[in-house]
Length: 351
Image (cartoon, one colour):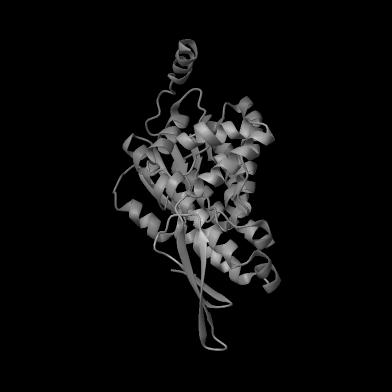
């Protein structure tokens, strides 16, 4: 038992030398992982180029007044924006090459049952999480090869276990596959490629407000036939399950992921899965036989259902007859003082 620990420690200890002043580009620095990572690496002597989607995110980073931190606006769905960032990076590095690229930018929503989706919903996620990631890597490879640098791609445990409808799991499986291919192709040039696979953390990706807003938009967009097939109770249960999952699974300690990313930049032999849920549950489940993994999801579903029953009330207002009918259903989840209000058939809000 002790031997594997010793071997891991020996392999984990060697670090790359002379990193002070090395240039790192980080995408998705508007908040959380990217925002914190940019500040931390700048404090440790890296020359950080923090790419933000919005001017607001950029301004918040600029207020820290670090001489080793620069910001730039990046929209991964726009090739012109990517080209502008590549030109900016080339000017900043002055022909020295770029030591690190951290692909942190991404989005998760919309997340919903598959037949609630349209093809544009998948493009919304894939264009950022996968296609944008691939494009910016391809356009920066010459600089990375010149510096024998590092590429760190933020994937997810959902790149091992796909159980959410929508483009998120698809994109993260794609990131895993592309990273494996890139790693093999770049070995000849001394470029290291690492994948960080976080579990569930409290970030913009797991924001209940965003998830529920998109769910309502998708539900209201459904045909009456599909909506009738699922029924109002299904929608209520789906939102309850999302709320309970996010509240129970999401970790607020971002340092677990940031430490992994930083180590991937400086370690000789980086390899990571971030978060206890990722290490102890999702990763193990992904390697298990299908029967075992299906049973695991069933158990997870049962954990969501609490023995305490309560009355969930939602109001349906028929704007045509100007009457209000109150419906109640028993759900096996603890109450959180919220309900579903239907303003009309085509306008529903969570309150």
